[in-house]
Each structure stands twice: as C-alpha cells, then as structure tokens.
Length: 447
Ligand code: UGA
Image 1 (tube, rainbow, N blue to C red):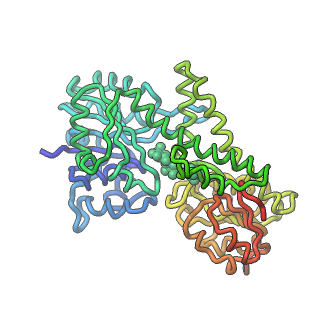
Image 2 (image 1 turned 60 degrees about the horizontal axis):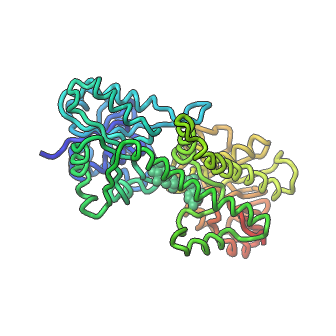
Image 3 (image 1 turned 45 degrees about the vertical axis):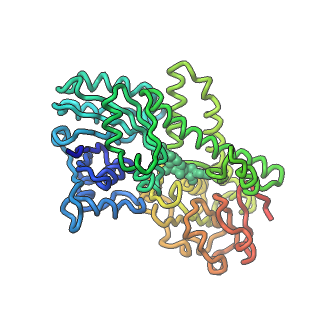
C-alpha cells in the first residue's frame, strides 16, 4: 500500500512539500494551526506568491474540479496522527527576539502536539532548519511521548528550496540529504523520494548532527559568496573598478563558478540572515565559536550594503539631507518572484530614507501588501511609472524582470530628475545613459 503522508506547517516549505508529495502520487494531509490558512488551501489558494504552486495545489486538493483529490488539509493533530505513516515537520524556526539564537518553540510544539497521537509505527521527518543537536534531543522526546514508543522513528531531511523556484526545487531536488538513526528511516525515505531518485537526484545518508549541519553550512557558504562579492564591490568603488566584470571573470574558474556572485545591496529573506546568526549562536554553545567568527564579518559586510545604498542616494541628491526630497523605490521584496519582505534589503533602505525625512514612494509587482503591513508609513504606488512621478532620484532595489523591461525614455518624462541608482546591478546601464539618465550602480565606475 502506498505510504500516507502528513505535512505539518503549511508555510512556503510545507505548502510546497504537501503539493509535491501529492504530485508524486501519495495521499497527503496538510496540517496547520492557523485555521484561515487551512481554509485558503482547501479552496486551492496559496497564502503567498510562489510561481507554479497554486496550479500544483489545484491539481490535487480534494473537492476541486478535476483534481486528483489526493491532498486534504486539517487543523487536527489527532487526525494527522491517525492518518500518516510518514509525518514531515515543516514549521518555521525564526530568529529569537533580541538574540542570535533560533526560536525552536514552533518545532517543539509540533512534536509535542503530534507525539501523543502516534499510536502505530510511523516515521517523523524534520525538515525545518534547526540548530545541530536538536534531532537527537527531539528523538528522545518523541520516544518518550509517543504511545507506539520505539516503533516511531525520527529522521532529519533538510530542505534546500529557493523561494521563487520552490516547486521545481521540491520536485527535482539537486540532492536529498537524510539524517537517520536506524535503517527504517532510510528505507521509508527512499520510498517517498523514489521518483526524484529515479531521475538521478543523489541520496546522501548520514547521522543526525551532520544532516543538521549540512543545511546551515550550505546557507553560510551561500551568504559568504554574496558577501565576498559585495566586499569586492566596496574595493572596486574605492579603486574605480567594475565588480560586474570582476565577477564574470573570476566565475570562469569552475572552482569559483559564476552563480551567486551578483553584487548589490546584499542578501535578506527569512533564511540566510537568521540561519547565519543561529549557526554562530549554536557554535558558541558548543565551544566552537572561533570557527565561525568569520560569519560575523559576512553578516556585517551584508548589513553595510544597506547603509551604503542610503549614503549613495544622499550623495546623488547633492549630499545634504533627505528632507523634502522625493525618492522612488522600485522593489520591496527580498528578491524577485516572491512576495516575501522578511528582512528585505529593499524595504530596509526605503525605510531608512523615509525615517530620515525623505518622501519615499515604493512599487513592487507582488510585495505591496506585505510591505504595507510591515511599513505602513511609506507611500505606495500602483505602478512603476506612478512611483517615479516627480522623483528626484529612482532606486532600483529588487531585480524584477518588469523593471528591466521599463523604458527609460518614458520614465524620464515624468521624473523631476533623471537619476537612477541600481542596487542590484541588473539594469542596462548603456540604455539608461542613452536616454539621458545619470546611472550609478554599486561597485561600478560612475560614468
Ligand atoms: C536560500 C537558499 O538559496 C536555499 O538553498 C535555502 O533552501 C533557503 O535559503 C532556505 O534556507 O530555506 P532563498 O532565501 O529563497 O533561499 O533565497 P536566495 O535565492 O538564496 O536569495 C537570498 C538573498 O540573497 C536574496 O536577498 C538575494 O537577492 C540575495 N542574493 C542572491 C544576492 O544578493 N546576490 C546573489 O548573487 C544571490
């Protein structure tokens, strides 16, 4: 009989995982403690913008015409416990308030709520990003609280999906990492991932702590790559070099690689920044803090980008204050093809300028609603053209395709001054300059 799967927590990770499991042919029950989220999902609506996810969901949610009916949702742990052979824990692990460490309370409540309902053999699979050592601790807790006792196993199976590519990354993972304590966990996960395994996705089996570390070290490496190129951007600015050319040239060395070397206002989002910090905090607890002190520098290079963007804007406006100046901001999300504004560099820059007296108007193709919620005091425009109307300077802060396709001549007709700062090194400098704009980007010569 085919395995029955539950997915606990239906945020970016869980909603995508649940739909993907149904696509792979399993009967799936998704659980969330927020009833409104469950109601939306039951209607086949996704609570966030993620390309392709709504279509995938609608293909499987029970009750939707033409769907496979393999995907259902609930708020009941009792129902989840009775239903599942494999339970994926996909709740979030944000940064603790006022601390670097990771807030494990959602993970712990998910385990505590599920365990008493595990009355028959089952595999619980952690997907959330957790500090190393959590899985071993949670396995003990599970064994003690589950009525089925030793027949309930735990595996750790970190997730590497990128927002904006969540569906693709989940259905066709570039690797499947599993941390296990016994053979049954590995066997069941091979069954769950039979389709991607047949497509050739590598399946890498290890112990719990290594699997937890794989995730945090992967994100730390990615963050390091971005901060490296941003540090080079700082040097390029001081030396009149061009960081875009530099990245292209070093990227030809296969050991370095071209990807993830886009200099700009740096990384944000719900993962990289908090994962770095939680990793440092955990290393400190383990007495290995020296090994990760470099991550402090990675974090500060990154945070410096935002302040630097504000200063470049001030300079572009003549070096005085922002008072009475009109600043148009294109982009609010932490990256394109997402509506996520968590720790968004773009919104941070917009906010800083606003707090210093600038009149900031923001436009983003998908992030307006979330941005308004986080920063209700900024002005928002319905289109890019409206945002730049009367602007003394335009800031390009999230590299949406829509912004690359803007016509500089059309925008030039409505701004007060043709000045643009490209915080993502993604616009065609020659095109903007040809249309009479002063174009400046981070880490590149000014003319
Ligand atoms: C990141 C990782 O890429 C995923 O592998 C991981 O699974 C995920 O975190 C997670 O831990 O859940 P994501 O946060 O969706 O995924 O976003 P990325 O595409 O990695 O971008 C992160 C930030 O870095 C964005 O703000 C982006 O603008 C910035 N970035 C990225 C750069 O500034 N330069 C680059 O070259 C690449």
